[in-house]
Image 1 (tube, one colour):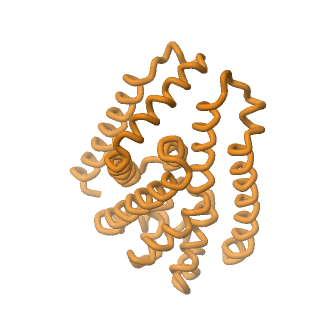
Image 2 (image 1 turned 90 degrees about the horizontal axis):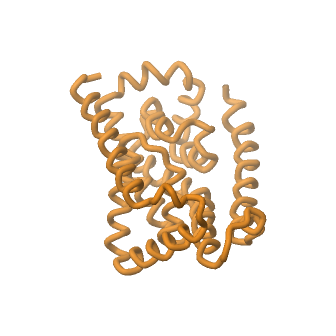
Length: 240
């Protein structure tokens, strides 16, 4: 690996992370984190900021996700945030588009600059899947995304296809379609949290869990995880 590129990506990731944390902690009052009224104020302010300039905020969110995912950032919190900011429908759409594009950019960078390194690090551990993906790379990669990437960390999921040499179009559309169900569930939870904070007068964990906008997405997520486990066992594990 080129030391200059390694330093660039490492430095870029740290700078973006620090900028993100700076904005978060400069906006959030740490001393009021145990005050539910404070969350209601935040919810009202965020809703106003988002609705006043929706398209601009969508572009900002898209660019942030694109850069964050490209620099190996984790994905799940972004889905909750997009649900809180934009609701479950628009939130799902913008998170699917932005994270899919970010994943593709990361894949292209890894495939161009770090292909040999990826093979050295990943081929031995995941060799049993290479012939499987060669048979029908779109279908198997779609299933791979649909079931959560076999439990592999998200950043590594985006790089792993380098050893399968997946075409960019198949990578993009398989990711896009495979992301939708899980992303919709997480965005629905985010939207449910936003709705609960907006309507509740005080916080109650029991009332939160019993909120239809919360327990239904969680129930669907459990169902998806069970189905994913069955698919993994019958499609991927038996191929070892």
